[in-house]
Image (cartoon, rainbow over all chains, first blue to last red; front, side, top):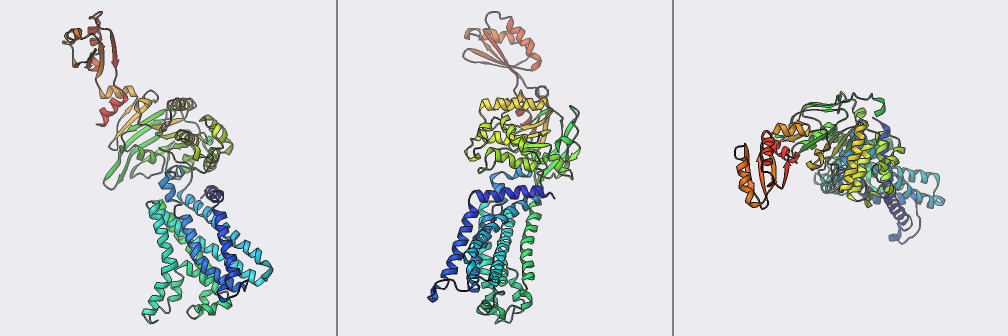
Length: 271
Length: 312
């Protein structure tokens, strides 16, 4: 494997997103949402202004869990199928480059663009709020940013996998939307439904493990469990064993969500 | 790198395909092709759509694996361990090349130069070579079809490849650009570059290549110089004899004892079809009609005729 080839593809993908202002637009969306949530998050309770970092992060998590998977899927769904459909894939593959290098270059370039806009967008908010945050709060906020990047990378990996499997861009975009629906909207409902229907008889013990089968849930657990104010609010603590809530373990699960789809994509792409 | 490989002996086989097959289920896209393309030659690959030439092209580049048989460039398998070394000696222009609209011409060449491990400093002179220096800093989005084609060709020339694979390279070029394109190819040939080219425009290719291979139904039906193929297929010649109407019968009488296949009367001329062996006899017979024949043209079978002779 030649790192230089991966870097060439990755830097093209990254600079493409900088030049067409994709990175700027996404960063601004994140900044705007985060500021609105931080200052007006409690407006329904009749209060305006910054409350606590815990509550701000809890609100941001509920937003990010919808937004980042969608952005990542839209960013990555045509990575390979787009080149194939436009007709530029053959030329790329005729270069002294392997399919794995091309795939990884695409992934890393897009992941860098997504990570950069996430960190820039939410980082700007941290700077704005810095006077109101102590070290502990900053630590939590930093954890939230890092886990957001991981969440984006996991869904980007799924998107790149779809873009290898899909026969054309239309199908790839359909698959991307379906993936978002499944993981973000349907998955938790199905689990809850199964629990309720069986009266908690079935699945009570494997329920926490099933949550790990969804990167969006892993992201939620990662953030909610580190916040004492919020954990009780969510009631998650009652079903989720503390041992499983180790951030390192959850981080590893997230990493698996990045590596496994990419591995499958690479296997398929070589066929 | 290309420069680290020793130059080939002129005329030695450089690209060798042996028993190459590509089957997609029951479809035999390429069905047992043997081919050797010699170092330094300009080789034309022609055939109808679906004849298998594009598939063969992709297998020569190592883009598509073969179902059976193997393809070697300079002795190395195109899909083998040495594929990187092989690819660095090869330039490829795909049919209907698609480049990146958001990059400028110069940036496009920088990108491909980095992938090929070539100095980006080559980009400028290469753009000049294909006549795009004036558009170097314009986005490809603003390029015409012909300019895109030339930029695609420039990309193929990066790294001074020893072999060029050009798939329908003159699509979208105006006649002037086609002439300068072939002038560049001739110059590259004199520098020892081997070129494999496909084209639908057979008349364009026939005076400009050293050898051709005609593909049909996944097989190479014939190969050789254009003259070799004309002789192999043994197609008839056509004479067009300009005479006035009242002399038509005299022409017919003069040719009656010869092996002439057909005589057709038109307004002011007679068309005569005969075998190559009868050519000189027909000319002598017409010369005896002194004064009455006002003009005479001979039409040799074109590559088109040869092509249809083999592929039908």
